[in-house]
Length: 231
Image: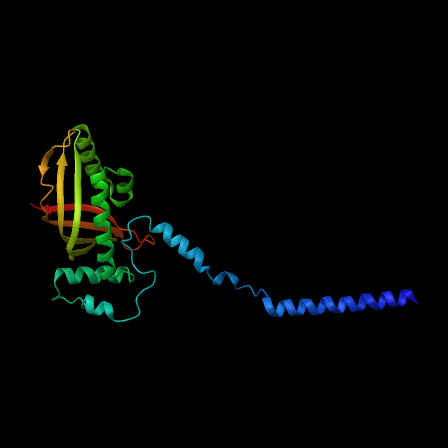
């Protein structure tokens, strides 16, 4: 008799277990072979943050779906000016390119590079510049250190930043930005005496910086490839 009750108990617990399995599957769902098509948005943000350790002169991750770009850069015909044609060529090669976002990133890069150069921070400068520009900056920093001089470069503000040239060189996009800024530039010797500049004078400085990147690369970062200034 007791064996009969034990058999009934086993059937009863098996029914309970089957019911729980069905309930769990209805709540948690089941694998259908398409799980990898969904991306972990938090992991994606971590990857983007790692990429942005380099100057954020980056484009949108997806092409824009509105007509805002048409307002920024008219369709480039034969009668279009070189800047318009250049921006249109870059846009065709890399639909993610956004002129307004590029300028916003260039302003950040301008401030970062000036600050790192004044501090003699070559480690920060290296990923932001191409090898030739980095070599020039590094040499200037070494010369300054050997002379026992210290540069105090205060960026008071950027009055304007405008794209003045854009073109494709093969698959490399080149964009030149004209920066008009207000700065206080002072060079002091080992004793702290001023050897160049005026610590009490704000001067207007005009710079032309050219940034470049492989327009077909998935790497969104741009590097500084040339600098020029108006005296």
